[in-house]
Image 1 (cartoon, rainbow, N blue to C red):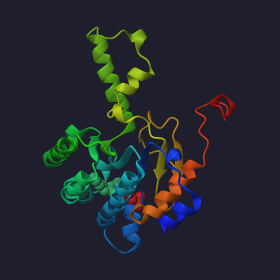
Image 2: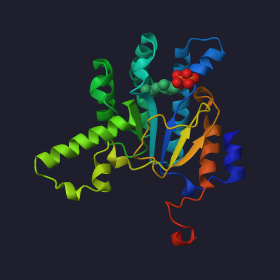
Image 3: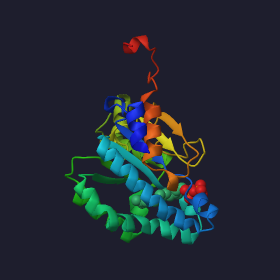
Image 4: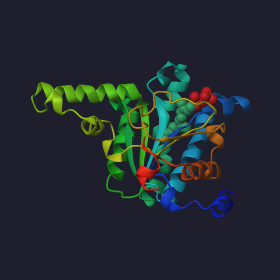
Length: 251
Ligand code: FPP
C-alpha cells in the first residue's frame, strides 16, 4: 500500500516538490487493452486525477498542473475530441464540492477562447467559485501548447513595446516568465509522465527548464497514490543543482 511505502521510505515534507506537473498519458491504450472504447480510458483517468489531487492536498503540495488537452489533440477523431471537450463539465459537476471542501483553487491555462462555449462557461464558473481558496493550486492545461504559450507571451510583450511601455533592452527572463499563462504558479519542480513515453510533447517548455523528470510505464488510469508516492520519493532523493556544483549550493 502507498501508506507503507510512505512510512518505510520517509517521504519528508521538506523534500516534497512545491509544484508538480503531470502528462497523463496512456488512457487510450488502457481502454484498448480491455477491449473498451478509448473514451472509457479518459473516463477512468478522471479517477486518477481525483487521487493525485487529494494526495497533493494532504501532502501540502502548493501547485499541480495537469495536461488535459493539447493544441495537437484536435487532430484526433471527432468523437474523441467531443468527449474530451465535455470532460471539464463532467469533472467539475462531480468534483467541485469536494474541491471546495479541500480548499483547492482552480485555474485553466491554454488558448481557452477557442474552446466550445459550454466548456468555457463551466471552467469560468469553477475558476470564480474557487478563486479565494488558499489550498492546492490546481492548474488544468487545456487546448494548451508550450510553443503557443511562448508565442502568446511574445505578442503581449511586443504590444507593450509598441505602446512604448517597455524598452526592448529591458526585456529579461523575469518579464518573459511574467507573461506566461499562470505566472503566479511558478515553475514545476517535478514533471511526471505516465504511459511509457519519454518526451515533453510541447508541455510547459519554458517552465520545465530545471524540473526533475520522472517517466513511468504505468498507464494513467492505473496511476494512484502508490505510484504518486513512488514518483515523489524518487524526486526527494535527487539532488537539484540548477547548473551549479554541489559545493556552491552549500552541501
Ligand atoms: C493521453 O492519453 C490523455 C489525454 C489526451 C487526455 C487526458 C485527459 C484526462 C485524463 C481527463 C481530463 C480531465 C479534466 C479535468 C478536463 P492518450 O489518449 O494519448 O493515450 P494513449 O497514448 O494510450 O493513446
